[in-house]
Length: 484
Image (tube, rainbow, N blue to C red):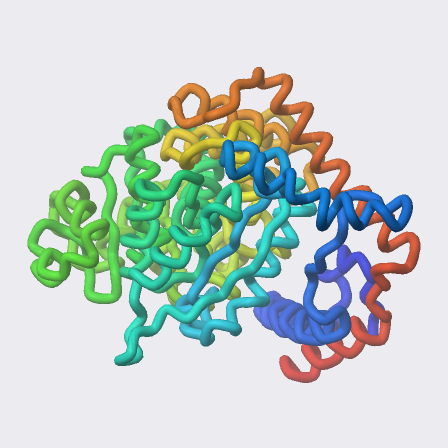
C-alpha cells in the first residue's frame, strides 16, 4: 500500500492505480471520515483553554483572582463597555447550535454537534485569531418539538459574556426566526454561518466565475437546487449584490418556488421562502429539470450525492456553464462528471477538489472584522464586502477556472477580509470603535500571526503531538478495503 504523508497533501496519489475517478472520490470521503474519528479520539477533541497572562510568582494569583480582580468587576459594573478591554469578551465568539441540522446528517442530538462547533472554534483561532467556545444546547419543548424561542432566550441571556455569536446547524424554519430576532434584539453581532456564511463565500466564487465567463451578475440566469437556509440566503444576497430575481428559479423538494406556492404562503414560519416566491421565477417553472435548461449557473445545496444532479441536466445548460455542487460531505455531482457533461467551472464544498466553496473562508475574517470595531451586528453589506474582498484577493493572485476563490492556506486573505468588513461596519454605522483600514489590517494580521505561532510552538515543543503514521495508514487501508 502507498504511504500517505502527515500533511495529507498527497491524498490524490495514494489510492490503487486501477481505481476509477468515482472510486477515488468515494475512498477519499471514507478516508477523511475514518481519520476524523481516529484523530478526535487520539486528541480528545481539538480545542483547549490556555492562559493568555503570565504567572511570575505566587502573588500574581491574587492579581488574576481575588482580591485584586474585584477592581475589574466594579469597573465593568460602572461601564459595561470596559468588559471588552478588561476581559476576553472583545475577542470571544460563542458558537451556538441545537444540533438539529448537522452537515448532511440531520438531528444529531445536542452533544452531537460538538465536533462541528469545536471545529468552528478551531478555525476561528487558527485562521482569524479569534477565540471561540462551542455551546450545544437542547431546544426541545415538553412535547419534543424544537423551539426557536429556547435558542433566542439562551443567546439573549448569555450575550454579555461574548463579543459575537456564530449560529450553526439549526434546522429550517427555526433558523430564520432565531437569526432575525437575535440580529435586532442583541447588542452584539449575531451571525448564522450556514446561511450568511455560505452566501458570502458563494457570492465570492460567483463574482469571479462570472468574470471568467464574461457575464454580468444582473444578466445571469441562475437555477437553485435546494431551498433551505443556505440557498434562500444565497439567493437573497445575490439579489442584494445586483442579481435579477426574475432570472432566478429556486426548487425545493416539492418543485419550483413561485407566487402560486400556497403551501409556503400558508406556513408563516417559512416567510423567507415566501419572499422569494414573490420575487423570483415569474414563469412559474415547477421542476429543477426545466429550471436548469439554458441556465448560466446552477447553485445546489440540497442532499449529499452523488447522483442528486444528473449529467444530462448539465448538458442542457448554457455554454460555459457554472456549477456549484456544495452538499456536504459528498457533492450532488462529482466535479469530473459535471465537467464531462459540459460545465466550464465546477465548485464544491470539499477541499480535496478545486474551488472549495466553504464558509471557513468567510467567518474567521468576518467575525474578526466585526469584533475589532465592536460592531453591533453583521449587516448584509458587511457580508457582501467580505465576498468582494475574497473575490478580489483571488483575482489579484491567481484566478482560473480551477481557482475562483482563495484557499484556507492563502497567507493574508483573512486579515484583508477582516479589514474590509471592519470598514463596511464603520460605513454602515454599526461600529462602536473607529479605525483606518491600515490599522484594522495590521491588528488582524498581528492577531492571526500570533495564533498560528502559538499553535506551532505547542507542536514544536511536544505539547501537541503529531498524529502517528499508523493512524493515517489504518484509515487509508480501511477506505481502500471498503471501496474494493
